[in-house]
Image (cartoon, rainbow, N blue to C red; front, side):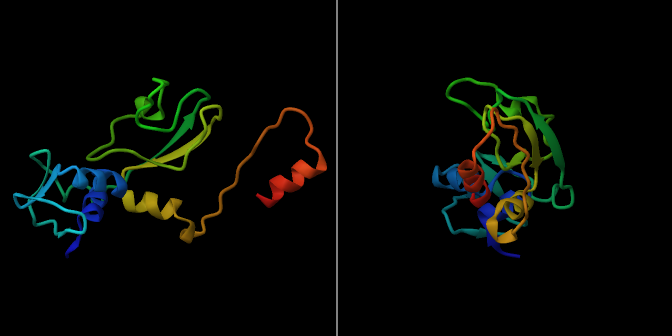
Length: 156
């Protein structure tokens, strides 16, 4: 089945669609020996390489991994931080056959549970507003908010 290249690679666990689009824009991806462009389509039967190394497109289709991680205060929810703060990705176990994709974010001064997966399509469905997945947050405040603040919080 012919699919957009970034969707095919994300489904195989090689990264997020947006990240893969950046690889394509940078000329790092080839399909059957030709430099790929945005909008190109491919099948699992094609030879797809990243930086000259052939990518496995078959090993992850049925192996979706999901990880729940408790993020402590002080870690950032990014792969690399220009301020060299610790990141959530530094403490995760290796992702089998791909990389971890975080579902949502928490601020550096916030602790709580984060969900990670190696399945780009699953991450997209969980995060996209069209899925209408309800999220619930518990917040602890210092002090007592007045009625105006509580009303603003209820409205979003």
